[in-house]
Image (cartoon, rainbow, N blue to C red; front, side, top):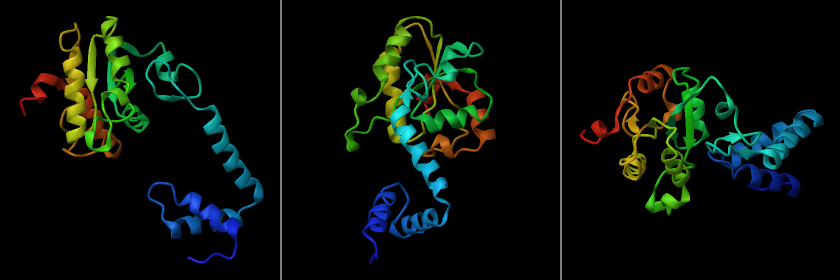
Length: 205
């Protein structure tokens, strides 16, 4: 792809680093930005700069937040005895959109995947185990995608807490095997949360 401007080429190269965006799509987006009023592009760059500089991880659940304790963890209307274990912020957003779950969350930051070099130490599993050991949590709900990596992560966490005084459950298999939570429709995901089953039962399937 030949560029008439080095500035244009640099912008296209940076945008094309985003997931799912190739060089042609990046060029189209950059040219669109050039056609917009300058202040609109400045709003975008300002929002991205503020995101990079100001974003935090909730000190309790590791969800993305603007403050030290996210809105969910600081809410007095949540059931603090139930913790739903998810992979990342997209899963929190998906479950919240169902309006069927009123507990707290624990964001792992990924799934165990030896092929990708992601082990338990790369995730926030230790802090989850410590929260369970503290005794305030009565139920841990596993809501990872039903992939090999998701099932491996669920089982690893289960083995860490199975001797502790806590109930473990998993979302019902209304979600197809191999599907990611974020792509499930709200009704199906909501039913899967409501109709969750004991984790031990899921291991027998």
